[in-house]
Length: 414
Ligand code: AMP
Ligand code: MG
Image 1 (tube, rainbow, N blue to C red):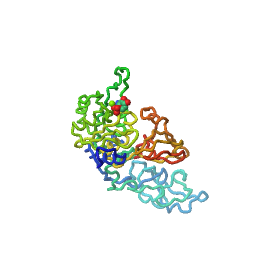
Image 2 (cartoon, protein in one colour):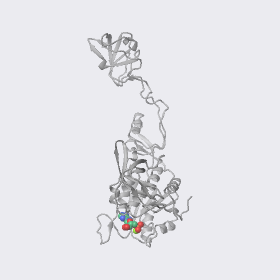
Image 3 (tube, rainbow, N blue to C red):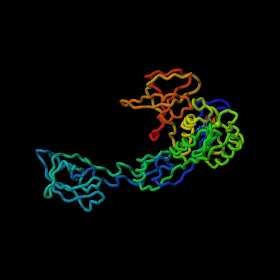
Image 4 (tube, rainbow, N blue to C red):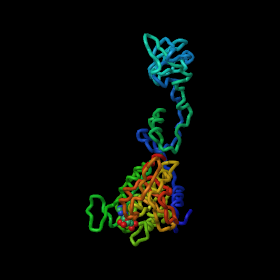
């Protein structure tokens, strides 16, 4: 494990975070609450879907061999002997040579029939159906179990449930499902300069931005956020809020993570016996980024700067929350995009995560930066829809070259 004294790379930091996470336990939840939750159990079907052979079309159940030679010029007439609706049973109905049965989509196939001619290819009159084309065996025919077989492992532990997955659960009559528990996450803001919403602002004070940006980000990944308020820049005030946070699975503080005179987070970790696993990451923005662990509880001391705290959340807290919730795939989706304007940075050992805006033109991804990259300019984060990964030791990426971008939304493709 990397030394807690020196700065670690983003990859090293992510590895340290992920090896520190033990997935939480499970709870039983209604499938109406299960979207995006992570399955704790394998789902094995105890039925076949469809349960019976059935028709894929509104039409006529018949024997394919009876249609041989049928065409517009030489139609064939079959005797209509009944009808089967979806949801009905073909009670005693049986197709034999020269006969057909009117059938609806999803209705069970009657005995004797091996094919369905769709209604548009036939003409029905006075107890007969006239057929204008041949049908093949098993045409417009759904076989029992072709969707799901009994014993199929349709969903697996660790799957994040999509709407289609929830449809599958419904098809198997699962009202409830075992899902990984949602992590509880306490948020602590620090800084004498911060005023809470609605509070009076003294000259020089600013509003607490981080708590709200992170609150919504936690909810986005199905965590359960709790905002504990603003700690003044004193050891005791900060420690008091930490003590209130200790019931949570994850504690996030923002600010006070650097080495300034009023930065207490490192000291608090030492005081509370939180094992410090790293405190600097080679990334810009967001170098002072602390991570620690006590028992199964995770502690993130994110930078105070709103751009940096959100960027650090995306890199480290997001994957931790997903892993706590049992998700297998936790990496941020990254795609290549064509850079529209040349970007230059002072080469350094840090990866730069630039706020970018991607567009899709002729099915290709393009990206530009959202202007000034000073980490104090939070507005450019709100204008961004991606982060551009500008690698370490790089001076320039020229317009037209490909760059990796992390999408800020669209996580549902995970
Ligand atoms: P710090 O790391 O505590 O020195 O904070 C770095 C910068 O981020 C300072 O300019 C702080 O005013 C600012 N900052 C810290 N916490 C917040 C917050 N919760 N909301 C908005 N800005 C903050
Ligand atoms: Mg501060």
